Amino acid sequence: EEGWIADLKIKAPSARAPAWSLSGGNQQRVVLAKWLATDPKVFILDGPTIGIDIASKSTIHEIIRSLAERGIAIVVISDEIPEILHCSNRVLVMRDGKLEKEILDAAEVGEAELLSLVSGKLANGEARP
Image (cartoon, rainbow, N blue to C red; front, side, top):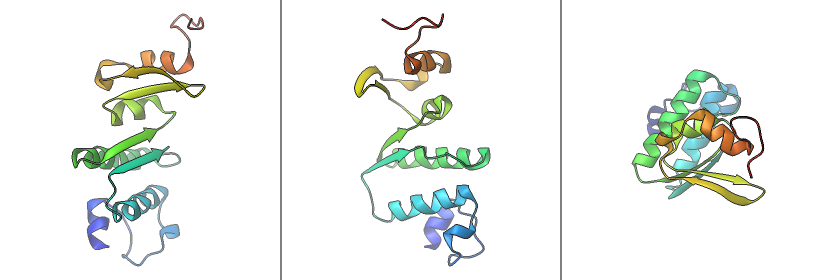
């Protein structure tokens, strides 16, 4: 218990404090701690930072990167382009259940380009062929 609190930077009055009494960002970290306790090989995170403040988002992103560095496969599903670029090595853009584009190095794509791919529109606003 105490190890996860320290590792995930959970701010709580005690290890026994109920999760509902914590801030949204700390609640997110409690959920991550519960999953980490199962020693997962893969994490699928759908909107991992929805509804939390910017500082907590940054901490969650650090945790995601740290887990990936430890060899855990991480799949992040998000509609926030900066979050995807910040947390990802590889990006898959899907539309209508089909793979639209695979970006092997997220560092090589900018927000505007990824937004264009996601929206299905060219930079000038025209629909992609």
